[in-house]
Length: 213
Image (spheres, rainbow, N blue to C red):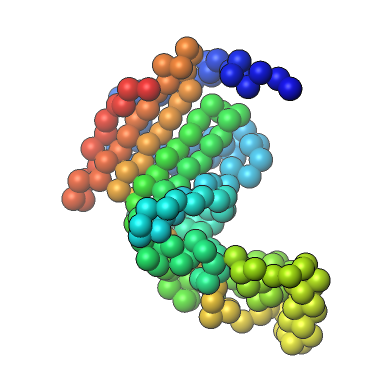
């Protein structure tokens, strides 16, 4: 096995200056996201969502960004999942985008809340039919005896909605919006002297600060 402690890569692609970034972090995010799209990084909208229980136990998983609004980032999931239960009890969350191909990372900290039912329905019915069926069929995060049970549920849902092109929105499924209070843009630099630019929300304004690596 390769010596993990000796694994390292020097980052030399680009730099990041507080004098060059947009004044609004959402504009900066869109700019970097567009560059990630153009670079053809696999699934640039994949992000780590970190949640925590009220007594401080954290958990994290990868979800997909599905929208950017002027005040927040959107994703969708099962409202009865573990992450949903944790967000209900503690709405403070964090997101992380890691784009190794560009030697970049974005960290977001904020407060999460559900989107409107109309917004959830619109997105749900834009998904492939198979994804809609899976959402109806899976009791996400619950213990099941075997995969066969899921396959049986899928067949049952397919039969139930066989005459419908799109399925209705399940009551237990929908969207969330993360409204950030801090956003950090990280650009890898040589010798681990990385560039870190943080936007901090103060009332209705954003303060831009440089952090030491």
